[in-house]
Length: 544
Image 1 (tube, rainbow, N blue to C red):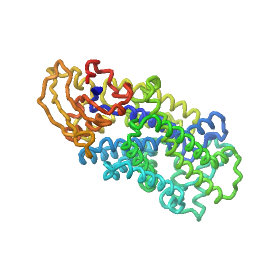
Image 2: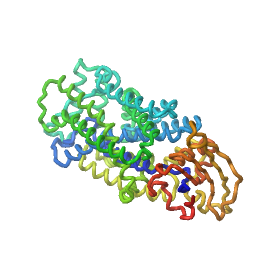
Image 3: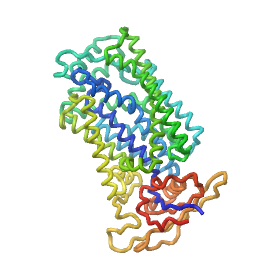
Image 4: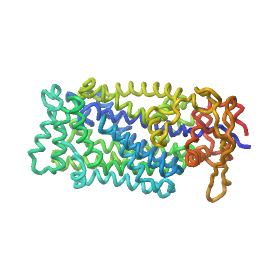
């Protein structure tokens, strides 16, 4: 007799939502640097003002060690996991989903912030379409190859000169009066670049763009929009090879980890312990080694004076930093999955789940808050705050995201942008309010009517698993819960059956409730991880 737990198709593995919420919160620690000051200041903790304060230094150091490159790697892995979870969808839905994601990303990039990652994700999702059903044995080496290729694009100087801005920028000299005119160093550097014949056309163009950066950020919206449009063409298209390889590579790794049952927690705590310790120790060591050339320059301990030697040291450090990102990311995955197994720890992580379920809305909301705070057409704090003060804003945004996401999802089924994205994908307005869910009183008069679906599966020992969706007679649900019985002997029947429903009956997939049974005892998650709405079900529903 197997344990049965009701799991609606809208159920998502809570471990994935915890990881996604953590990545969403963590990525703001790095993105805030790009909102708050010029691009040349993102790794200059002494800016603005030129005086290196202890709190600013340690804030920058901790963010670089634990979050820089790691959170976008984790985000990319989870996007790849999503490709696996939606692999059963019809091709038209898959293409529509990524087309509208690209549109949302382009709107974000050109109207608000150049650092958008959604367009890259949409492009990678389309490029990886043929691999949605590939095995982990194929996906993992392909992913590692792409990540290594992305590192190569940053290390091969001729390619860097052709495809993007200068890789290693000269240290920004802080002279008297720099605090009063924080853009002076950038303007002087750009002017010098124009007078240096050895610089490539791309470096000269980049210098011209950077010379206008401070003026654009401190001016009005239209002026900033025009400058940002030019930067976007460079950032996303002219120099997009690195991001395509990096994000695409980590997506492939995420797909492989999902196929192997790692991200869902099916592989057990031993592997997660190993991932945590090996990833954090090895990745941390590589990160520290990669930071050394920049740390020496920041702390005034740099013994290198030759420009070519400085450049080689910077490139080598960058290679180590990018190489470390994958290891530290796996360390974070192991740590968070372990915490998800502990009910007491999961209580603390529970608010992160709401952030993860509305990740797209929270990502765009963080941008909106930051541009209002920093841009000249908003509160105008651009190039005024150091790392410590930036972190204070990050903490306030985190608190707001947790609170608003939790309250919002009590009333609504999706985040606002998730709802828009889903409606555009299906080309029909999706139900938004939880009052419209099965088992909840409808706002319109009369009892709601829903269909009962039965999903049948082939035996577990079969070489290939097949699922069949059978529609039963409609029944009134005025006084009873919807009952849709689905039985499968699968490690994760809820997710597999959800794919069947979304492919065979997407218009009702969100309105069908599954009663899932599994004969694989080892596949069961702890009770607090079975469903994000398990508390809504009555004890008598849990029957064998």
